[in-house]
Image 1 (cartoon, helix red, strand yellow):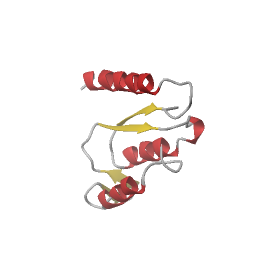
Image 2 (spheres, one colour):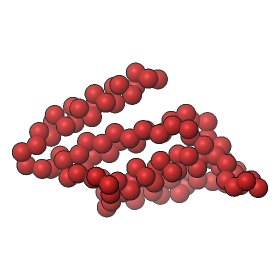
Image 3 (tube, one colour):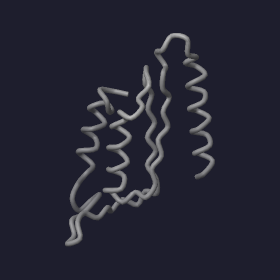
Length: 105
């Protein structure tokens, strides 16, 4: 979790792949996604709890739809820097969720 969103390098990558005529196009009805991907998976970690301020997930969910990717899932491992919480167990639980998602493919 980076500055209420995600690292600037990821934002730069997104800016570079959003190309009119390649990943989307404009029509009389509005933008139409051209990506053939079926699902976008966003994985993030945070030292605290993100809660309702998960702007990275909101942004990427919107981008997924804009590009024509029908499905979206997010996996978060939160609270990794909070004393008293078991960071390795939090990561293990996130890894288990990812294994469940991988089994769907």
